[in-house]
Length: 146
Image (tube, rainbow, N blue to C red):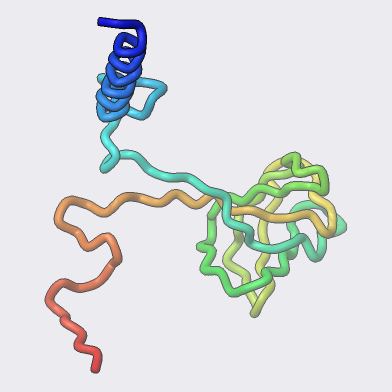
């Protein structure tokens, strides 16, 4: 073989090797799961959902009034975090049952919230159970659009 055919053979061999490696899922850092890790069906996704802003801090410092930018179904006893202008967590709250329109109240568990601080809720999504519709629909109900 001459030099140019050896170079061409090397390039083709390199392309085939890179193609074969890219088709395989490697464990660990490269996207595969390691032994002992939960499967995707068991994993849960956690995200921070904005609830609103601190509208009032009680003079006693035991509760706050939160003005929600939208109607968000926040159950009583739900934990909330307060983040100041710098984005650093400044307080932890627990939602109380009192709610009126766009306002809800929360007890201060720790920290010092200030008026205007952003309030976030930890929201954990659970994957659908086996056989459950991931979109929450009813399999028996068929909707026909015309």
